[in-house]
Image (tube, rainbow, N blue to C red; front, side, top):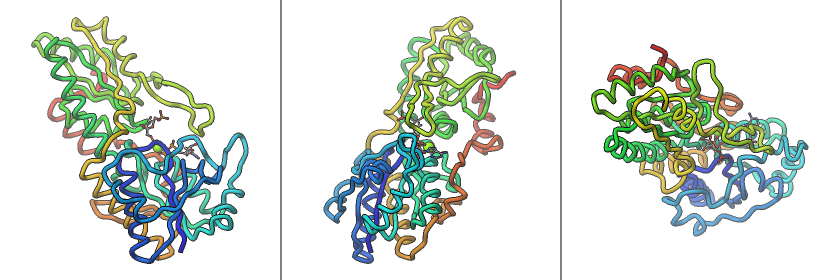
Length: 354
Ligand SMILES: Nc1ncnc2c1ncn2[C@@H]1O[C@H](COP(=O)(O)OP(=O)(O)O)[C@@H](O)[C@H]1O
Ligand SMILES: O=P(O)(O)OC[C@H]1O[C@](O)(COP(=O)(O)O)[C@@H](O)[C@@H]1O
Ligand SMILES: [Mg+2]
C-alpha cells in the first residue's frame, strides 16, 4: 500500500502531530509506504514529493508548522488560469501509484480534495486543520485550541498595561469570516467587549461603554475578530493575494476601530493586531492529543479503503463525515450559541446597538 500525505492552507500548530500519527499508524499497522507531498497541492502540480519513514516523523509531535510545507494559493482547478486537475489526478494514480491521499487542511483544502475525489476518481481522506475552527462537519479543528491559548495570553498582557494607563485596548484576532477565536479567547481573557463577524457592531454603543468604564477608573479590553464590521459597514481588507481563489486577506479592523473610538471616548485608545503569532509555535496538549487521534483515525479509514470522508469530532466523539458536506461551506458562530448567551449574561458586550 502506498499512501500520500499533504498539508494545505494556512499552517497551524499540530500539523506535524498529524503527519506523525498517520505515518506511524500506516507503517506499524500495515507496513505501508508513505509519501510526503511538499507545499500542499503545489507539490502535486510541480511534482515535488519525498518518502516519509518512521525516523522522518519521530521527534516532531510538539513542533510548530509543517515539515512538508504548505500553500494557501495553489489549486489544481485554477493554476495560473488553467485547470490542471486531470494532470494532477494522472500523476497521483500513475506517476506516484498512490492508493490514497490524506489531505490535512481547512475548508478551502477540503473543497479541492472533494473536487479531486469526484473529478479524478482519487481516494481521498481529509483531516480538519485550522486555527479558525470554521470547518463544517466537526466541532473542533486541531490548531484552534493553541490559537485560543495564545490570544488569551495576549489579552491578559494587554489588560495589565491598559489598566495601568486607564486606556481602551483593542486586540485583533484572526479567524477570517468566523468569530470562534475571538469568542473563546475573549471569554477566556476576560474581554469587556467581543466583536465578531457574525454580529454587526455599533461604534457609539462601544464608546458609551468605554466612557462609563473610564468614569469608574476602569480600562476597557476589546477583542475584535478580523472579520468584524459595523452594522451596514464593510470588512477591513489587509491585502489581496492575486493568485489565490479567495484573494482577500482580512486585517486591520483594530486600527479602524481605534480611529473611530478615539474622538468618542476620553481615554487614549491603542490597537494591537496579533497576526501570525496566533498560528505559530508548539501545539497545546489538547491539540497534540486531538491531532494524534485524527491522524490515527485517518490512517484507519485509509486501511479500510474508505474514500471521500473527513475525520471529525462531534459531541466530543471521533467520527467521520462525507467531504461533500464539508466542501464549499464555512462554519460560523450561530446566533443562539450557548457561549454567546453565557457571556452576555455576565456583562460582556458584543457591541450591538443599544
Ligand atoms: N471555495 C473554494 N473553492 C475552491 N478552492 C478554494 C476555495 N477556497 C479556497 N480554495 C483554495 O484552497 C486552498 C486552501 O484554501 P485556504 O482557504 O487558504 O486554506 P484552508 O484549507 O486552510 O481553508 C487554496 O489553494 C485556495 O486557492
Ligand atoms: O497567512 P495569510 O495568507 O496571511 O492568511 C491569513 C489567514 O489565514 C488564517 O490564519 C487561517 O486560515 P486558513 O486555515 O483558512 O488557512 C486566517 O485566520 C487568516 O485570515
Ligand atoms: Mg479556511
